[in-house]
Image 1 (spheres, rainbow, N blue to C red):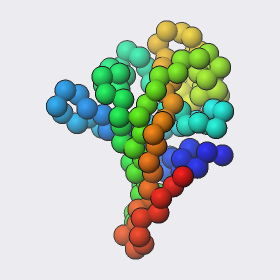
Image 2: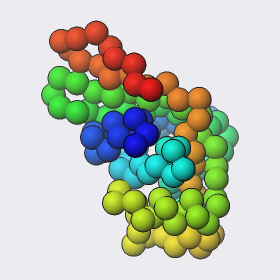
Image 3: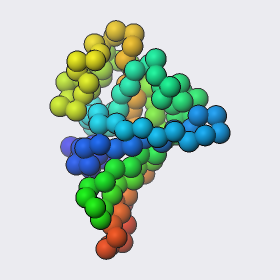
Length: 130
C-alpha cells in the first residue's frame, strides 16, 4: 500500500489547509484512497474547498496519531475525474459512497503529487515518510 495513504488512514481524520485569497482555511477530511499506487482525496465540486484548490493546488494536511505524535503532509493536488478513479475512491472504506456517484457532475477527485510527509513526535526526531 502507498505509505502516505497508509499513514493518513492511521490518523483517520486529517485536516487540509488551503488558501482563500489571503486567508488560510482548514477543514477535516477522512477520505484517502489508493488508486494505481497513487494517493487520492475527494470533495464536492460545489464547495469552497474545491474552488480554493483550483485557485492554488498546494495544500498541507495534518492529523494526530495520539496525544504525542502527528503526521504532516504537503502536496500539490491534480484533479483527475476519470470515472474509474472516482469509483475506486467511492469504493474505499473511507469514501463518501452515500454522497456521490461517479460522473454525477458534483464529485471531484484529486491525486496527491509532489508529496512531502513527516511523522512528528514530542519524544523523537521527525521521521520522513516516503
